[in-house]
Amino acid sequence: MPFLLRIMMDVFSRSTRRHEAQEELRHSEDKLRQLEKMEALGRLAGGIAHDFNNLLTSILGFSQLLLAESGSNDRIKNDAKEIVRAAERAADLTKRLLSFSRKQPLDLTAVSLNSVVVRMDKLLRHTLGTDIELVTILDETPGTVRGDTGLFEQVIMNLGINARDAMVSGGKLTIETRTINCSDDLWLSVGLNASHEEYLLLIVRDTGCGMSAHVQQHLFEPFFTTKTKDMGTGLGLSMVYRTVQQFDGRIDFNSSPGQGTEFLLYFPKAPGLVSSAPVDVRSPVPTGNEHVLVVEDEPAVRNLTVRILGGLGYQVSEATNGAEALEHCEHRTEPLDLLLSDIVMPRLNGRELADRLRQARQGLKVLLMTGFTHQINIQKGESGDVPPVIYKPFTRESLAVAVRDALDDKE
Image 1 (cartoon, rainbow, N blue to C red):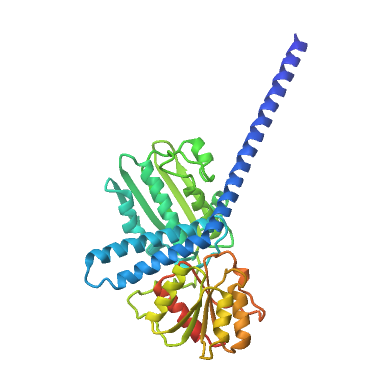
Image 2 (cartoon, helix red, strand yellow):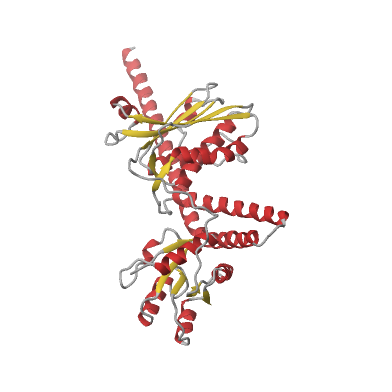
């Protein structure tokens, strides 16, 4: 009997180990598939960015011109505003996808979490619907963190949408900001960086259905979702997690079935930084009368850029590619103050074109534009300088400021 028992135990042990090995293999295969999906998403996002940003530049720019010229026609004005909003949302989505796939360089600035929450209030109320109460509790001694305003807005929106979907019968969503002094227990439990004494805490709490233990285990995995295909992609929380990591923050959560969910996002406080003030759209748009050569192979973007600059008072010439631009300058003797060129063009890119023209025209200022936000290395020229770059899609105001800054730059 003991002999038979040992054999049975050995068989059971082997079976258990084989099952565990199969489960580990399956888990590894799942992880590999997730990584392959993320790599595919990165390639897709990077591949479409240039063409998509060209399209958005045209849509956003011409709709803004239409809005400016609508006069007292409220119907045209309202239609143009809706087009502008849609284009801005599409541009923001492209930026998020590129950032998520690590194709978008982050422009980190000082961000006030209080300001972000206030700015998102109206949009969130519209998104949540009338059956969900939104409550905001803001820190009385607000500080700033180092990050990207648009990404923080996307974080709040993603968490807000998830909360809405978890409160199918209505409920309450609370968004709170706090300043906290980190204790050793908090550093250990959440994994905060002990070199930061103070953190700003963003809390998003709902009264929804909560999450099971199984859902919590896979919560931040890309493409994991409990929603139907027409309601979610499974990227929302993984994008939130990625953003928090990018800003040297940490994320924690509390949830149980039927008890709602609470997300706690910790960001290192950045003392001494001043939050960048939003651009006042009512302030005068800078103008000029200098000669600008616009080089762009996409007709719609080129036409838009020429029209905007002409309306701002500049003398504008145009070319469809680098070779045409060189020929233009060889046959014309009038002064040329600024080269405004797309970076990515066939045969002769914008950086190479700038080098060629600067050899013949000393003191020529250069401003490059691109929709390929991850190909920064193409900026460096023979002289080692790095000209300023304006990223597509741009607006009339941002183009006006960039052109004026480039012209006024003292080398």
